[in-house]
Length: 87
Image (cartoon, rainbow, N blue to C red):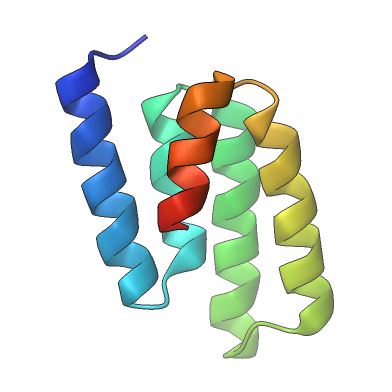
């Protein structure tokens, strides 16, 4: 597990990415931080589809949210709540 200072840096990075409306990249950064390779690969594929289509279809957003919620199972509850505040 990463130290608290690094977690604060993650929160800041995620906050900046979501401010830029780059929610998928924010989720990629979270999955990298926790070394959740399957989720990182999945979010990268979602990003790839987004880039191919040129927009985020509602079904793709729904799927991304579904995968995000699955990923949160592997993150400590207190940190999930803090991440949700910046997502």
